[in-house]
Amino acid sequence: MKINIPYHHRDFKINIPDSKISEIIYPKRRRLGPSEQLIKISLEAPVGSVSLKEFIRRQKDILIIVNDHKRPTPTVEVLDVLYRYIKNKNFKFLVATGNHKMPGVDELRLIFGRFYEKFKKSILIHSPHTRLSYIGKSRNNTELWINSRVISARAIIVIGSIEPHYFAGFSGGRKSFLPGCSGYRTIEQNHSFALNPKAFVLRLRDNPVHQDMVDMVNKIGSERIFSIQLLLDKDYKIWKVFSGHIHKTFNIAIPYARRYFCHRLKERAEIVAAVTGQPYDANLYQTLKSIENGRLALKKGGILIVVSCCYQGLGPESFARFFKNPYLIEKTTGHNFEHYKLGDHNAVNLKNLKNRARVWLVSSLHPEILKKAGFLNFSSVSEAINQAMKIKGPDARILFLMDASLSVPCV
Image 1 (tube, rainbow, N blue to C red):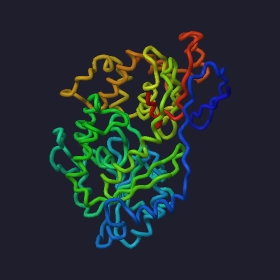
Image 2 (image 1 turned 45 degrees about the vertical axis):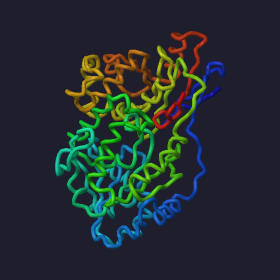
Image 3 (image 1 turned 120 degrees about the horizontal axis):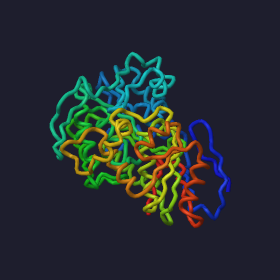
């Protein structure tokens, strides 16, 4: 069988006998309607809230929170419809960066598209280190620091998209506030719960990471928030829109998201090729989503081949430090709550994975950087697969996870 493996702006073309293939899992297809119509209908008939028109009727000043360029949210398509409602209002945009690197002009153009020139004087970028307000503690004793503009805003519109997240359960909804607009201390304390076994992809019940996020929204005041949440298909096109109350829109969207993103497996495989789609192929930190999902399809002692260009390198320093000093991976434990530093959960996950499987990458990263931390890098998918087959023997079969960043294998 001939298979095309997407890799940044080109494809790897491989040829593999059918008998060697366990499964090929492609993203599910969805019938799409006109996105403008889907958004408009949702805004006029929201969930658990008055219509958007009524929500902003008496408000002079509006804060609109949008995802940064690290998320595939098609913000421009929402703005096409939203602008008709807000054009006579005073409004500001706040880009929810969390602890990501602050976007430059090029990244802002990706987010706002043709609206950038019109709105550029109204765009604010969140920093987790400045202009913060303390609003109390979560049920898990996390200190809740939030961007002060969020607290001063009387009307907030938040635009997001819902997809699986490997320790928050799902992104979207409440995640625009924590970590999106939170202080560094809050993000660090919240992410320490990623070490908790209940912090897992697709899981919300009793997940302390999710609980913190919900508590943050409740402290801010959910009645001040109008949420616009999108479900996207494999090409990041809109197929569902949920608008209204931030918790109710999220909760109603989750069953749809589960059915779309979860893929039932016949069995786990000895070799898994996890292909990372854009924009999650930018660096190794974002690629962790593929690694975490790919390992769910892997037998113990198997080989996980992660295909991701990583054209921007390793990622933030909180993650890159583990590759500059691989000893940090070995000394970090899953019980390191008291002395947790942001990113430690990634080291724990990588260490646990290394103990049960081999992790290979097909990327543009320097092989020596990965080798020090115990990971091999290959220049092509064929080379990695051929080597894996030699090691695992003639009876081994390969499972291809063709959009591993957003496809969750369920056994």
